[in-house]
Structure formats: structure tokens, C-alpha cells
Amino acid sequence: MFNQAVRRNIDRFPDNFRFQLTKEEYDDLRSQIVTSNGSGGRRYRPYMFTEQGIAMLSGILRSDIAIQVSIRIMNSFVEMRRFIANNALLFEKVSNIELKQLEYQKSTDEKFDKVFQYIENHAESEQKIFFDGQIYDAFSLIVSIIQKAQREIVLIDSYVDIDTLNILSKKNTGVDVKIITYSNARLSNTDIANFNAQYPNLIVKRTQVFHDRFIILDGSKVYHIGASIKDAGKKCFGISMILDHGIVTDLLTRLQSV
Image (cartoon, rainbow, N blue to C red; front, side, top):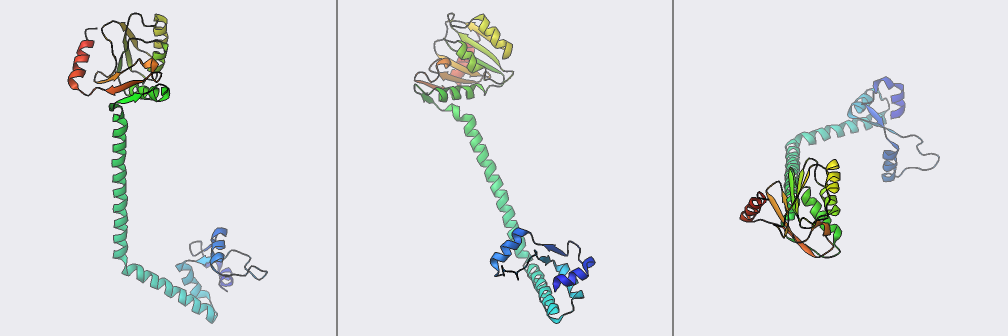
């Protein structure tokens, strides 16, 4: 009877007064209410009415049953509004609690992000030991250290070759590289020129002053390496960040005379 009344007065029911259920909504409704699946069942998806639509229906319905149903539905809307109005303060408190919870969650997430970022940025400060065969792990750590440099990398390594340059090629663009190595290191002028053609700028100085291996980033961070970086993971060796400021200063001062 509702649909018949609506069809006869279709101009009084714009889209915001009624809407048709989707197939999913209708199937869900049927699963909750026992309906006929035979030939006598509904063939079309039903329409639902908003409060404005119910109010309009009350003005066009004629049968006693339809009028009573319309009145009950309108009373339900009135009770719903009264409940919302009487509990407005409660809803506001719940909303404020949810807002505070979201703000707290956001603040907590930001704090965790800072902690994880700090761990990531300072993970290399811990001493690490790599055993023979851990080539990938050792290579990954050395590359991550090299990529920390923003301006300059100084590598003190007695034995360098093409493999060393391959690792240094992972540096950030625009970062200068200085290698201090032995005079008999297997690194030719052609190797240096080829590297500079693609990853400038590289300078190689040869001296017998140093025995141990070091990586120095931006003239401030110093790492001690137990083996040549070209052999990373091939032999058991350790790598650690030097935290003693005095030792770092002495090493940087010694470099100035090379």
C-alpha cells in the first residue's frame, strides 16, 4: 500500500525522502526476517523511507491500517530524537573520549616512530662481529654506514681494489671519497678514473702510516673495521663505532698530516 500511494504521488517523494535497498542490503534483511522464497515472494527490492518521507506518507495515506502504521513510525522518530536530545551530553563525552584516544594513539605512534628511527640511526654504534660466510650481512652493514655520509667519506684501508670501489659506489650522490692505502694496493689510475667518471669525486693517497682500517664520515664519525671492506664476510672480523671523542680527535689530527 505504501508503494502504491507513492507511485500515485511520486512528485512528493524526492530522493532524500525514500531510497531503494541495494541487493546486498535486501539479501541481508531477508536473512534476518523470514520471507517467502516462492512465487508469492517479493520480486523487487523494496523502498525505505526517511523521516521526511514518513511525514509525507501521513498526508497521502487513506486506509486506517496505513494511517496507524504511519503514526507509529512517526512516534518512533520522535522518541529517537528525544533520546538523542536527552543524551546529548553523554554522546559529547563519548565523542571527546574517542577524540582523546585518537590523539593519544597518534602521539604514541609518533613516539614509537622516533624510537625506531633513533634505533635505526644509531644501530651501527654497537659492536658487531661477522663470521666467515656472512657476506651479505657484512656487506649490508658497511653499505648502510657509507650511506650515512652527507659530505665526505675517508677510507683508511691497506688493501683496496675494484671490489672496494664497488662498495663505495653505493654512497650518496655528491659525497666525496678519499682512500688512504698502501703503495702496493691493487688500484690503478684507470680504475680511479673510471670510478670518477660515474661517482665523483675520488682521491687516493698512498702511505704506510696506518695499519688498522677505519671509515670516517663527514669528519666526525669514525668506525674501526677489523678487515678490508673488500673482504667483508669472507673472514671473521668485527666492526664498531669509536665513541671516545679524544681518540676520534687524535685520528682526525693525524689525517691532516697525510
